[in-house]
Image (cartoon, rainbow, N blue to C red; front, side):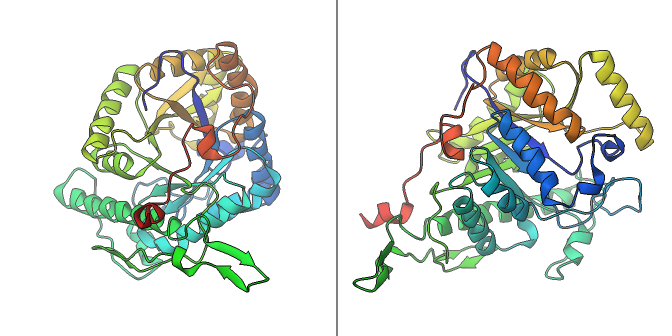
Length: 402
């Protein structure tokens, strides 16, 4: 799926605690006392829906947040603790109508059968607005929470032992998504009869064993949850290098990339599209979104000063895998259009301070993009796949039966 130079852009926001800057909780608008309440998340996501955004992603992990890449830390000056992302999405679903809900799922320590029915349930609760963000974990402390496997300690991701570990984790995630997708298809769409007069609730011939046998999973199926309203809820993943690019290309509907300029975007998109073709999916739609951390204000000076203040509170400069943008909505719109010319179809924006930067996205950036005819002025579809122009896929088992 390649964009044209003037095609409408897709927009999502990534929500993580009080914001992506580690000192965001100390801002007056941050509401840290409300962080573990349903109302806090409802307010953020309804604000995103007010801006007509395609979807929100909800960060999650199976260990405490840390300033270190692979280890816990002892810091007490940053937000620690989370609510479960899938449960947040399920709580917010009934009080929203349009916006997609995409919680993060750690494949390394969870079971695909459980996650398949959790996301299918979210799709029912939201009337077709569910997705998931696939994430792997290479942290030894997270593995120790479960006691099922040992994750070897690596000092960096550059050495051969680290690459072997990442290869295993991403191969496992690839199989994981395949199992989840098969389980979503294990009930045909008309498997439920619900005929009280004849006493037939389901047509057993329309429930299918998936009989998945692989290195990491052996799953018979079928699911216990009927096929989701979207058929296949959205599968998304963040990618920075070859292994995650391959996962995105072979299994995802949306990939999040982290280019810092249009030339880099063009190069990364080319690699992912080549992997998509190698995976036999060249004719299937695959959205590629650019990730950016954003600090939006009325001037670049004000945004830069706010970042400097947050860095001072944190005691160190903020760094990120994604480009950090400081400036006005108009300048950000210029940047998004420039990056889109490199082959991106949309963007996932990470608000540095959720209480400040999310409203700036919805109330400043969105109107600016609308003035340029680059963003919708109303929701036209009723499902998350519909927002992204993705058709409801046929059931693989029903097709095979025919």
